[in-house]
Image 1 (cartoon, rainbow, N blue to C red):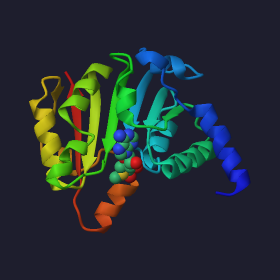
Image 2 (image 1 turned 60 degrees about the vertical axis):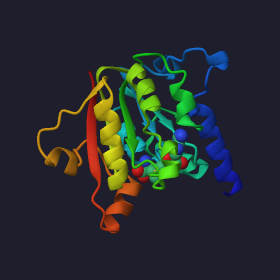
Image 3 (image 1 turned 45 degrees about the vertical axis):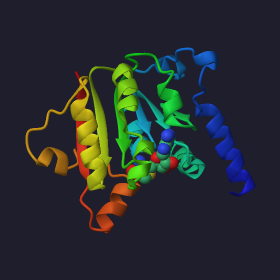
Image 4 (image 1 turned 90 degrees about the vertical axis):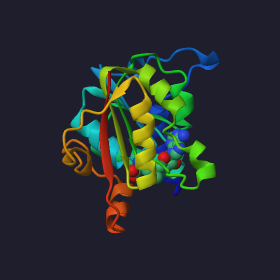
Length: 212
Ligand SMILES: C[S@@+](CC[C@H](N)C(=O)[O-])C[C@H]1O[C@@H](n2cnc3c(N)ncnc32)[C@H](O)[C@@H]1O
Protein backbone atom coordinates (compact mmCIF):
# COMPACT_ATOMS: atom_id res chain seq x y z
CA UNK A 1 0.00 0.00 0.00
CA UNK A 2 1.39 3.43 -0.93
CA UNK A 3 2.29 5.90 1.89
CA UNK A 4 -0.57 8.38 1.34
CA UNK A 5 -3.11 5.61 1.03
CA UNK A 6 -1.76 3.88 4.13
CA UNK A 7 -2.08 7.12 6.13
CA UNK A 8 -5.62 7.61 4.90
CA UNK A 9 -6.49 4.04 5.90
CA UNK A 10 -4.87 4.42 9.29
CA UNK A 11 -6.85 7.60 9.93
CA UNK A 12 -10.09 5.93 8.84
CA UNK A 13 -9.38 2.86 10.92
CA UNK A 14 -8.63 4.98 13.97
CA UNK A 15 -11.93 6.78 13.47
CA UNK A 16 -14.06 3.69 13.19
CA UNK A 17 -12.29 0.94 15.13
CA UNK A 18 -14.37 -0.77 17.77
CA UNK A 19 -12.19 -1.54 20.76
CA UNK A 20 -13.06 -4.25 23.23
CA UNK A 21 -13.33 -3.31 26.88
CA UNK A 22 -10.63 -4.61 29.18
CA UNK A 23 -11.32 -7.24 31.82
CA UNK A 24 -14.23 -8.89 30.01
CA UNK A 25 -16.57 -5.98 30.78
CA UNK A 26 -19.83 -5.77 28.87
CA UNK A 27 -19.83 -3.63 25.70
CA UNK A 28 -22.96 -1.72 24.67
CA UNK A 29 -22.29 -1.23 20.94
CA UNK A 30 -24.95 1.48 20.50
CA UNK A 31 -23.01 3.72 22.91
CA UNK A 32 -19.85 3.42 20.77
CA UNK A 33 -21.27 5.24 17.72
CA UNK A 34 -20.74 9.00 17.56
CA UNK A 35 -24.24 9.61 16.16
CA UNK A 36 -27.69 8.46 17.23
CA UNK A 37 -28.44 4.85 16.26
CA UNK A 38 -31.90 3.28 16.31
CA UNK A 39 -30.48 -0.22 16.36
CA UNK A 40 -27.22 -2.12 15.88
CA UNK A 41 -26.48 -4.80 13.29
CA UNK A 42 -23.40 -7.05 13.19
CA UNK A 43 -21.72 -8.62 10.16
CA UNK A 44 -19.23 -11.39 10.94
CA UNK A 45 -16.47 -11.98 8.35
CA UNK A 46 -17.40 -9.17 5.95
CA UNK A 47 -14.52 -9.94 3.55
CA UNK A 48 -14.15 -6.95 1.19
CA UNK A 49 -17.10 -5.21 2.86
CA UNK A 50 -19.46 -4.93 -0.15
CA UNK A 51 -22.48 -6.03 1.86
CA UNK A 52 -21.43 -4.05 4.95
CA UNK A 53 -21.06 -0.83 2.95
CA UNK A 54 -24.38 -1.36 1.15
CA UNK A 55 -26.27 -1.93 4.40
CA UNK A 56 -24.62 1.12 5.99
CA UNK A 57 -25.61 3.32 3.04
CA UNK A 58 -29.18 2.01 2.87
CA UNK A 59 -29.75 2.19 6.64
CA UNK A 60 -28.16 5.41 7.93
CA UNK A 61 -30.04 5.26 11.24
CA UNK A 62 -28.60 1.80 11.98
CA UNK A 63 -25.19 1.40 13.60
CA UNK A 64 -23.43 -1.33 11.63
CA UNK A 65 -20.61 -3.27 13.30
CA UNK A 66 -18.35 -5.34 11.06
CA UNK A 67 -15.89 -7.95 12.33
CA UNK A 68 -13.12 -9.15 10.02
CA UNK A 69 -9.69 -10.65 10.61
CA UNK A 70 -8.38 -10.17 7.06
CA UNK A 71 -6.70 -6.74 6.98
CA UNK A 72 -6.79 -6.34 3.19
CA UNK A 73 -10.55 -6.79 3.42
CA UNK A 74 -10.73 -4.17 6.16
CA UNK A 75 -8.75 -1.71 3.98
CA UNK A 76 -11.08 -2.35 1.04
CA UNK A 77 -14.15 -1.79 3.20
CA UNK A 78 -12.68 1.43 4.64
CA UNK A 79 -12.07 2.78 1.14
CA UNK A 80 -15.67 2.12 0.16
CA UNK A 81 -17.08 3.57 3.40
CA UNK A 82 -14.97 6.71 2.97
CA UNK A 83 -16.02 7.07 -0.67
CA UNK A 84 -19.71 6.86 0.19
CA UNK A 85 -19.39 9.02 3.32
CA UNK A 86 -20.85 6.46 5.73
CA UNK A 87 -20.22 7.31 9.37
CA UNK A 88 -22.50 4.69 10.90
CA UNK A 89 -19.99 1.82 10.79
CA UNK A 90 -17.61 0.49 13.42
CA UNK A 91 -15.06 -2.17 12.61
CA UNK A 92 -13.61 -4.81 14.86
CA UNK A 93 -10.38 -6.09 13.33
CA UNK A 94 -10.14 -9.35 15.20
CA UNK A 95 -11.83 -12.67 15.83
CA UNK A 96 -15.60 -12.10 15.89
CA UNK A 97 -15.89 -14.67 18.68
CA UNK A 98 -14.00 -12.33 21.05
CA UNK A 99 -16.51 -9.61 20.22
CA UNK A 100 -19.43 -11.97 20.83
CA UNK A 101 -17.95 -12.75 24.24
CA UNK A 102 -18.41 -9.17 25.43
CA UNK A 103 -21.38 -7.60 23.61
CA UNK A 104 -24.26 -6.67 25.88
CA UNK A 105 -27.20 -9.09 25.91
CA UNK A 106 -30.01 -7.97 23.59
CA UNK A 107 -27.79 -5.33 21.96
CA UNK A 108 -28.22 -6.51 18.35
CA UNK A 109 -31.23 -6.34 16.04
CA UNK A 110 -29.67 -8.22 13.15
CA UNK A 111 -26.61 -10.35 12.44
CA UNK A 112 -25.13 -11.55 9.15
CA UNK A 113 -22.76 -14.46 8.52
CA UNK A 114 -22.40 -14.55 4.75
CA UNK A 115 -20.45 -17.23 2.94
CA UNK A 116 -18.26 -18.12 5.93
CA UNK A 117 -15.18 -20.28 5.38
CA UNK A 118 -16.62 -23.79 4.90
CA UNK A 119 -13.79 -25.81 6.47
CA UNK A 120 -14.88 -28.85 4.43
CA UNK A 121 -12.65 -31.51 6.01
CA UNK A 122 -14.51 -33.25 8.82
CA UNK A 123 -11.58 -32.83 11.20
CA UNK A 124 -11.76 -29.05 10.57
CA UNK A 125 -15.54 -28.69 10.99
CA UNK A 126 -15.01 -27.45 14.54
CA UNK A 127 -13.38 -24.31 13.07
CA UNK A 128 -16.64 -23.27 11.42
CA UNK A 129 -17.98 -20.00 12.78
CA UNK A 130 -21.50 -21.45 12.98
CA UNK A 131 -21.34 -23.72 16.02
CA UNK A 132 -23.73 -24.42 18.90
CA UNK A 133 -21.50 -22.22 21.12
CA UNK A 134 -21.47 -19.20 18.77
CA UNK A 135 -25.24 -19.58 18.33
CA UNK A 136 -25.64 -19.51 22.11
CA UNK A 137 -23.76 -16.21 22.16
CA UNK A 138 -25.75 -14.80 19.24
CA UNK A 139 -29.01 -15.90 20.86
CA UNK A 140 -28.01 -13.85 23.89
CA UNK A 141 -26.96 -10.77 21.87
CA UNK A 142 -29.96 -10.72 19.52
CA UNK A 143 -33.20 -9.14 20.67
CA UNK A 144 -36.43 -11.13 20.46
CA UNK A 145 -37.64 -10.94 16.84
CA UNK A 146 -34.15 -10.07 15.56
CA UNK A 147 -32.91 -11.66 12.35
CA UNK A 148 -29.88 -13.88 11.81
CA UNK A 149 -28.99 -14.07 8.12
CA UNK A 150 -26.80 -16.88 6.85
CA UNK A 151 -25.59 -17.55 3.34
CA UNK A 152 -23.44 -20.30 1.91
CA UNK A 153 -22.70 -22.04 -1.37
CA UNK A 154 -21.38 -25.16 0.33
CA UNK A 155 -24.09 -27.86 0.55
CA UNK A 156 -22.43 -29.55 3.53
CA UNK A 157 -22.15 -26.26 5.43
CA UNK A 158 -25.77 -25.45 4.53
CA UNK A 159 -26.87 -28.76 6.06
CA UNK A 160 -24.64 -28.08 9.09
CA UNK A 161 -26.16 -24.61 9.56
CA UNK A 162 -29.64 -26.00 9.24
CA UNK A 163 -28.95 -28.75 11.78
CA UNK A 164 -27.31 -26.37 14.32
CA UNK A 165 -30.04 -23.74 14.03
CA UNK A 166 -32.90 -26.20 13.95
CA UNK A 167 -31.67 -27.78 17.18
CA UNK A 168 -31.26 -24.40 18.88
CA UNK A 169 -34.28 -23.45 21.00
CA UNK A 170 -33.81 -19.69 20.46
CA UNK A 171 -34.14 -19.66 16.67
CA UNK A 172 -36.94 -20.31 14.24
CA UNK A 173 -36.86 -20.30 10.42
CA UNK A 174 -40.08 -18.79 9.06
CA UNK A 175 -39.68 -20.44 5.66
CA UNK A 176 -42.75 -20.90 3.45
CA UNK A 177 -41.38 -22.13 0.14
CA UNK A 178 -38.13 -23.05 -1.58
CA UNK A 179 -37.95 -19.52 -2.98
CA UNK A 180 -37.30 -18.29 0.58
CA UNK A 181 -33.89 -19.96 0.61
CA UNK A 182 -33.08 -20.08 -3.11
CA UNK A 183 -33.61 -16.38 -3.77
CA UNK A 184 -31.72 -13.61 -2.08
CA UNK A 185 -34.12 -10.98 -0.69
CA UNK A 186 -33.88 -7.51 -2.29
CA UNK A 187 -32.41 -5.96 0.87
CA UNK A 188 -29.56 -8.49 0.85
CA UNK A 189 -26.98 -7.43 -1.76
CA UNK A 190 -24.58 -9.99 -3.26
CA UNK A 191 -21.17 -10.49 -1.71
CA UNK A 192 -17.93 -11.24 -3.53
CA UNK A 193 -18.04 -14.88 -2.45
CA UNK A 194 -21.60 -15.24 -3.63
CA UNK A 195 -20.56 -13.92 -7.02
CA UNK A 196 -17.61 -16.33 -7.10
CA UNK A 197 -19.98 -19.20 -6.31
CA UNK A 198 -22.40 -18.22 -9.06
CA UNK A 199 -19.56 -17.87 -11.57
CA UNK A 200 -18.44 -21.39 -10.66
CA UNK A 201 -21.97 -22.74 -11.14
CA UNK A 202 -22.73 -23.31 -7.44
CA UNK A 203 -26.19 -22.40 -6.15
CA UNK A 204 -26.10 -20.41 -2.89
CA UNK A 205 -28.53 -20.84 -0.02
CA UNK A 206 -29.95 -17.81 1.85
CA UNK A 207 -31.45 -18.29 5.29
CA UNK A 208 -33.08 -15.65 7.50
CA UNK A 209 -33.66 -17.09 10.98
CA UNK A 210 -35.59 -15.27 13.70
CA UNK A 211 -34.68 -14.94 17.34
CA UNK A 212 -37.78 -16.18 19.20
C1 LIG B 1 -15.18 -16.90 2.61
S1 LIG B 1 -14.92 -15.29 3.16
C2 LIG B 1 -16.49 -14.49 2.87
C3 LIG B 1 -16.38 -13.00 2.88
C4 LIG B 1 -17.71 -12.25 2.64
N1 LIG B 1 -18.66 -12.50 3.71
C5 LIG B 1 -18.31 -12.62 1.31
O1 LIG B 1 -19.36 -13.27 1.30
O2 LIG B 1 -17.71 -12.23 0.28
C6 LIG B 1 -14.97 -15.49 4.93
C7 LIG B 1 -14.43 -14.28 5.65
O3 LIG B 1 -14.59 -14.46 7.06
C8 LIG B 1 -13.44 -13.97 7.71
N2 LIG B 1 -13.37 -14.65 9.00
C9 LIG B 1 -13.15 -15.97 9.20
N3 LIG B 1 -13.19 -16.27 10.51
C10 LIG B 1 -13.44 -15.09 11.16
C11 LIG B 1 -13.58 -14.75 12.53
N4 LIG B 1 -13.47 -15.67 13.48
N5 LIG B 1 -13.82 -13.46 12.85
C12 LIG B 1 -13.91 -12.51 11.86
N6 LIG B 1 -13.77 -12.80 10.55
C13 LIG B 1 -13.55 -14.06 10.20
C14 LIG B 1 -12.31 -14.28 6.76
O4 LIG B 1 -11.16 -13.49 6.97
C15 LIG B 1 -12.96 -14.01 5.40
O5 LIG B 1 -12.79 -12.68 5.00
